[in-house]
Picture: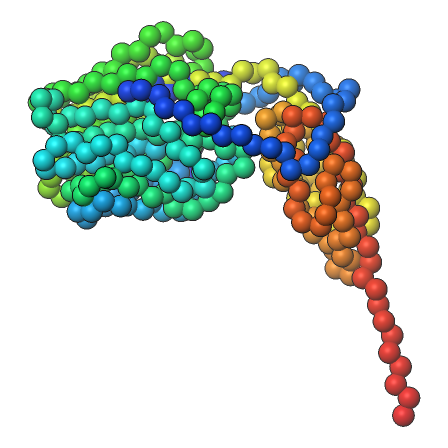
Length: 364
């Protein structure tokens, strides 16, 4: 995966504005081990802010239907957005389908067609996904028919509202705007519900090479040009609490999408994990404990972990030299990795035992 650049915003997660209709897909996750309510359930001041990471971006100038990105590995409970731009010489293609990237489902958030307004040839679409236990792998972008070229920008947003299905709680208002022969576009949104919400803007321009200048106060996330004719340029940018999402370029046909990304509340419910280690070995926690926990990572001694109630924590036991891992007990069972949804308090014991040694004698 390419290096990531991170931009942090405020103390809460911001909302993105996307174009078009919102399509939701249901996903139900069940914890793999039982939990129990207990007196340790608490409400904590979560010192989190919105952070944006560029996961990957790219361009493919081949005339085809299916495109693949670099492999990605999303973090748990983060909003993943994918902006995709495609061109067809006859008419704007339908929004492509997305699959892979460690996610079960990708949901269309917004879409706009342009170049030109009356008979568009380009489509810009933004997607979202979120998972408590994502996997990894490349994204596959599949159009219904061949397109001349394809550009994409994949971003990760932490500190966002994690309620709803597949990241729906992290998206508030959206908007879009196309134009012919324009030197810039502005997507105007309503006042943000939280001053820590983030404005996410995506712009498609009939230009090559890269030609977009972010609006005042906005930071560019990435820009990908087609590198060929027909000219296409995809740019993404973000800013805190900026409901006029703008960018500029020299005169060209263009389309824009604006999104408000919703910040997570600074007050979050937490739960505790009581981890007991018997014998000699370590337990790795993914993710590691939040503020207030005593567990190192990996944990080498018995300790207490503090987690948000939305965290899905995976525990992996590793025996020291001369020892073997016997089994989990408590809220984990068996000998493999254990996944715990921290919607309740949990208590787990990892038991390690010495490897039996044998002495052989040889009499001649």
